Length: 366
Image (cartoon, rainbow, N blue to C red; front, side, top):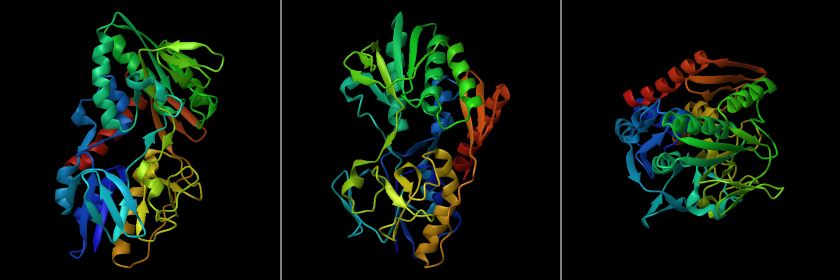
């Protein structure tokens, strides 16, 4: 049986780990991914601040695939026909499958910011962002003063605002950073205590927060009042949008275009297709779009792929009622958010650092 894994996301790291431990000889597995590297997005703020090097926060997929006996193709899927069990790759090749798993992540929604052109950096894909940030950082440190606008009121927007401000301050460069959160405000999915602590952290860093919607123009962003917030660069940490190939894939999709899956993370329209992470959407609304659920769903996805290949019963993924978030709030500082609880301090950063490093170490050592 031909199993194809598309994407090297967090859930597929765990699938590769499981296949290395147990894989039937009759299962022929291929991994299709555009890069050999999988960056851990939770460590991105620390990387920007200089707390981590590249190899501290990324996993090399090649040894993982090798240990699992998985053939690896460095390319991306450009088209798909789920009715014919067929994928089309960027180089024009066609790839057939009997069983398919999608963990390609998502793209950043830049619908309102597209006119910024080369002044715009999107947070996803993370590897591409890292490459661009190196160039942008060099440009900004060559200026006497600079201006950055970060658009997005979620955890990514807040953390990146602080990380960039910290990095440029450490380089003794003056940089005005503005965070535009949109109408929902700062960290809308978290409890009031956590939102207050993050607001205080942003103010302490000298970051201005605007609870308004922003539209990109040639030299910055325009707010609904008509006010222009000038920027040398705009960072988009806005909502997610699905990969373009899904629209014509014949798969059943959610209202916003992601792969609609059931509690087994199996496609609601095609029983031989599974999906996890940002590319998927649970129709029961049991999960938010978060890397936490991609990691936790990984073992269930691994079991279900092997079980589907062997015609055995599947297991549902049952999300926990509360999820733990550790949000970067400054140099060696972080905020804990867990349901209605919140805390902050250096000890939260040290806890987050240990968790993140152990996650990378787990897949590096196999």
